[in-house]
Amino acid sequence: MTVPAQASASLQEKQKHFWHDEILRLLPIRSQFVLSGNIRDIFIVNNGLVPALDALWARLKERGYKFMAVYDRSDGLSLSYVDSQFRAQVDALLGGGKDVSLDRLPQIIRNVATSRELRGALVIDYASRLMQNGEPYSEHAANLFVSSEKYANTAAAIFVKDVDAVPLYNPVIWLVNRDNDLPSWLTLDSELIASIIIPRPDFQDREQAASQLLGQFEGGASATPAEKSRFASEFATLTEGLTLRGMFSVAMLAKKEKIFLTDVDDAVRNYKVGISESPWKKPYLRDKVREAGASICKRVKGQERAVTKSLDILIRSIMGMTGAQSRTAGGKPRGVLFFAGPTGVGKTELAKSITETLFGDDRAYIRFDMSEFSQEHSDARLLGAPPGYVGYEAGGELTKAVRSRPFSVLLFDEIEKAHPRILDKFLQILEDGRLTDGQGQTVYFSESVIIFTSNLGIYINAPDGSRVQNVKPGDPYETVEKNVNDAIGHHFKFVLNRPEILNRIGDNVVVFNFITPDVSQKIFDGMFDNVLARVKEEHGITLQIDEDLRSKIRSTATADLSNGGRGIGNRIESLFVEPLARALFERNITSGTNLIISDWAETPAGYKLVLT
Image 1 (tube, helix red, strand yellow):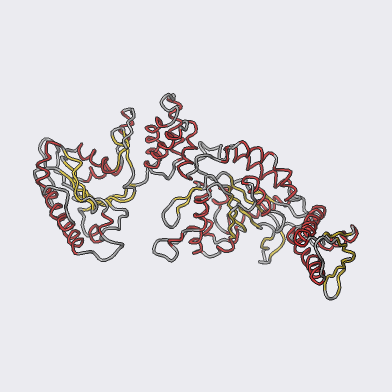
Image 2 (spheres, one colour):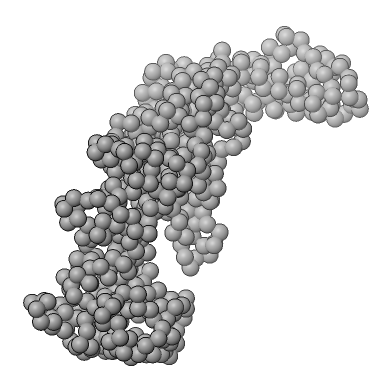
């Protein structure tokens, strides 16, 4: 896995990682080490990327160690790290052969830890697997841990003349997944056992690794120093949260698919979401969005400003300009929209229209009704239950959906109804474009469009605690937009005490206006025609209606616009669809019949209409 590269003296100096230095620093006073955390990563050593064991041996060898034996339950004892001239002496010390059972391991630990002839180390790899799922220790495992504690306290540091000014221990080094995988008393009761957590690589580590991996990209070998520096910085930023092993895999994918240095974002996306071709860069998508304005305005009537602003944000996403004001866009979602305004004015309809524009199907969005997440513990539904809890194996609804469809529109309806702790989960999504589920798997949102809807700002709490209208039908749009934005800001800053969420949404709040009387006429006509079309489709019956009678029904259905277009639809259902269904049900009408709605009126028993 070693990737050679040229490096300056200053870069070589930076290659000494904290955990390496910490082990070497503590060797005079610590006899055993427990390494956990990012132990399966690769690390920069001697101008190459190498596994943890190779990195560890390189540093121990620098300090005069002659061998490093490695034991795990699968392969037994191996001796890949040894100074060849001491091979026979080491074999005798370890008892020869690799078939070392768990019951023999304490003797091996004793031989290594107490040897005064050779400086060496014993690594117990996959030590988390010495016990089975937290079950009581076997007799051999219990004996191993007790013996290890004893040798930790009784072993002596070894002084090698002309090599070190101070004596050093022959350490036993445990590699575990988590620092609590070993018995707690083993580390807590001994000052001679040090626990070191290996962190994930920081920006500097990733930048150094990127400079060594650029040769795997097309054009990397011939890049100028300025291009190399820019690539290293961008690669390091795009891989925030990844290990160096993950960066290595990105580079190998780039080499296989011949991805150019300038398209490093494509390589990272390929690795994260598993799709090599980005729909966002397809020419047809630009054409669809360019022509979408008129068709969307036909579906979402009377909201031209909201449609225009939403499309502008969408165009910004397609052009890869989201977060362009920052050094790099990182892994943020492709687009974020916060739809706010009265109920029934087209917020969800616009989300559907955007989905159809992007994916050709308005049902392709992934919707979450946030009123179902009003309890703090309901985050387990989104992310999955933690290990040990019921439903852990099932995973989270949100994380599973995004993992299966990374290119998607995520609709979070009525976001203000979610528990504030649930909203905290969106901080990482909006900032870094990733989330870790209950199973520890990272899910990436970098290719998703996220849409929130909310009714915040329409009603506010008065000083006496009562609910009053903050905006009302007939207010100029500028007034509606300002008052709603002010109320949203107050809610996040002072009610939820989470201004950071609103800050990450930024200026992507899209305020919808009330349904005006002229727009309500258009909404009615569209819904009314849908009813006539449904009757013809379902029953083969053609209905006709006089314009005066249609106008009478329209006036009744649009008399109250407080509930927006949804309210108009509800009124049409009660005053027209129900009496129409009743009239058709009571008559045995065959397919192909033409009928006229000759009368419609409200009676004490409800609405009735006459078919002739």
